[in-house]
Length: 213
Image 1 (tube, rainbow, N blue to C red):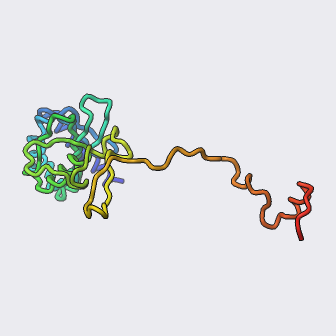
Image 2 (cartoon, rainbow, N blue to C red):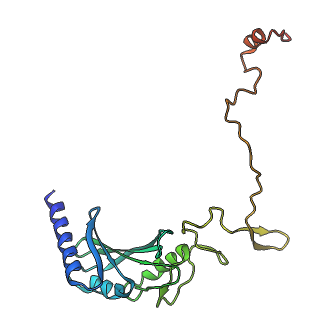
């Protein structure tokens, strides 16, 4: 318990230092037991460089980078960076917002592993990263249309992929839903059965029928 209290106290001190002494910080607070820092795109590189190099923060590792989509917002995307200090044993989460057209500065020169995460965020959300020399899709196939983790992306996608035996190649075609709309009978599945196994005599009595012997 004492260790947890000290950890929260240390994070609280970091949050206070960031919010009061670092320009461009929109907010820095403990949320869900973690230090969450929100900043603008223009201040991102300076902040991330400080979080990596300043011994008070010492975030040697970028653990991951992910996107979150809020379609109703003007800047619909959150880009979330999860940083880890192995030396000090704490984590810091940094969040910036953007839209489909304004790029977020790449941090690959600070943490080379960021290239993989930025490519994934671009692939799945369509977020652009300026200064990223290898901004290609990484999970979806060549020729894929759209960005599948956007909340307005159709669940069926836009195209389907199959191997054409005649052409001997993989082909892309518009999605075709071959199964027509079906009316399902949600009544008891036994309603349509005249006689259940082992119930022949009871059925005969109910219907006044004489079953063959």
